[in-house]
Image (cartoon, rainbow, N blue to C red; front, top):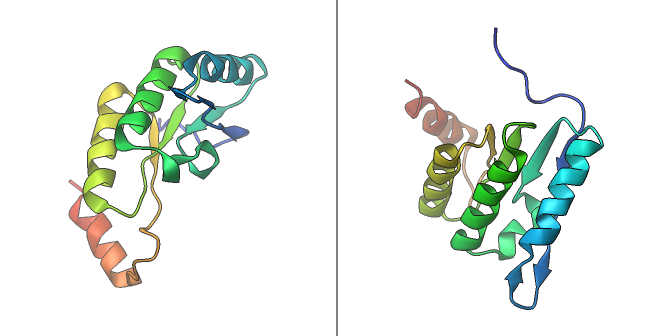
Amino acid sequence: MKQVIFKGCGTALVTPFTDDGINFEVLRKLIEFQILEGADSLIICGTTGESSTMSLEEKKAVIEFSVKVANKRIPIIAGTGGNNTKDVIELSKYAEKVGVDALLIVTPYYNKTTQKRLNISSLSNRK
């Protein structure tokens, strides 16, 4: 049977920062609170999570940290989309490697892509 992870309440988390960078202690508290309150999944590094202003290394750190904190108690959906295809692929592979349950990928913004090219791209990656 196929596992359904897109149900109920999927909370898009903010990425908390201090002047020195990501505030992992506050992020841990946010994750624990959502799990305690019954969220069905967590969206990490989406647009709510300030992904467009984060470096690739910051995104990797937040994704890996979130997977470890959740510890399979709740599905983690990682926002890996962006305007740089090379970075999107790298981040998506990294997110898969560290154990996310799903990816949230946006069509590159500001780049005009036809529906036909989107379909070809998605089909070429299928096995």
